[in-house]
Image (cartoon, rainbow, N blue to C red):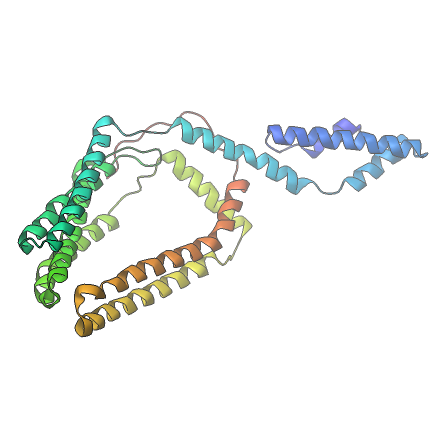
Amino acid sequence: MTVTEFVDHLFAGYAATPELADFKAEVLANLNDRIADLEAGGASPAEALARAQDELGDISDLAQQLAGRRAQDVFASMYLRQRVRPTTAQLLSYILAGTAVVAGLTLVAVGLIMPWPIGVVAVVAVVLLALPIGAATAVALTQETTNNMPMRQGRALAYGTGVFLILAGLGVAGVLLTDAADRWVAALAVGLPLVVGGTGLLTFLGVTQTNRKKPWLRARMEQDQQAASAWQPGSESDERWARFGVFNIALWLTATALFVLGGSVFGFRYSWVVFLVAIAGTMLLVGWGLKGSLTAAQVGTSASAPADDGPVSRAPAAR
């Protein structure tokens, strides 16, 4: 076996990439140099080749990493080829919704400072805050994206309605409590049914929602999951996210108790601040969970088999 045949056999089975080709050429050059040095020292060609092979060591791990970059390149090219941009009408709807939200926040703040009649402020909060965000949610879900198929208009409208009900309930309750802390009964009477109704609607939609991911992306995700399972069996990722769920539930139960206790003692005008702290705590817990999952995700990406970069058909709107 010649040096070239040995190197070809060494790199057989790996996906061809520019990085791997450079590495292969470098290995061949180093082997030839080493064989020349050994022959100059008196070794026969066969002895020099055998000794150079033994000294080379195991390069399979590095070759696998370099070959794995092809899967990443294919996935990136698929992503760029299938990018779907929003239409002009969708962009205009987002701009109008954002403008309405900014105007609504401004008017609500002015109405509470002036003050305006509390009913007027509540209507402004519903019309210029909750309604635009709910409408933007519905429009966004009917849009085909790079990763997701478009949702049917009726189902998207139901999602938008759920978001609107929750925001309307929170907005009206917040306006009432900010105006007068002793209006918590009225705030609960108006806001709670809206929030519960919206939450129930979104829960139903979420439970019955089908997978909107495009087929090529689902196949890619399955490859990554299989690779991650093969490389890190029994990793800490699942345990870490289980602890995240327990800690997050404890955090929000504590925040709710402090909200009720603080509102009863000091008034509900300021006790809602505990929920901001709870949101910040949830974000910290999410970061902590992602930190443990990052390694598995990276391993899964690098170890996945090369993806097929052929044309991908578009599927109809998801349920």
